[in-house]
Image (cartoon, rainbow over all chains, first blue to last red):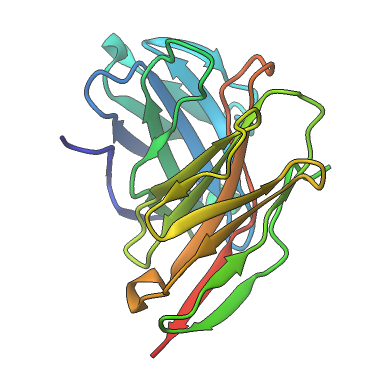
Length: 117
Length: 116
């Protein structure tokens, strides 16, 4: 079974440009999450989709970030315009909808390393 | 306040020895889950082990075990018989059941180096 995939693996852009990150979750996983790790700090939650709906976007830093999940399959995260402080590793994770009290494990992709110059 | 604290930025262990990576957490939610992930240099985040707050026994998965001390709010990862391939970054994470979202809270990670 294929895991979570992310594209691109690396991106180097200049301040003010636009970048779009893509995440393909594990097939059948309705939950999709975006996280970000800035150098040396903890991984922080950005937002959560259930199918195509945004369940929680409390971690989105500002309105320069736009996430979509058309059709409830893959998701994109667009940063426009990018700023220096947006540099970091962007992780995507997915999980199935939990059918009981057990907390479902989130499976992570390899991340996209974004560097804004 | 930090939900997850990992106080060891870097650790070294001799090959074949056991090592404990520390993790403490902060929550008032009676129901929560604790997770450990491994991130090798290739970048992917690999799920290692899960412990539920109501689980009576410590979780084990092969050479990984979780030393869960609920009263102390600690969930240390123990790796037995370390191998060179265990060299990686290790993250502790928590999710609270009653929280309206599903987000994980992560620590800053511990970089483990296994010495031959």
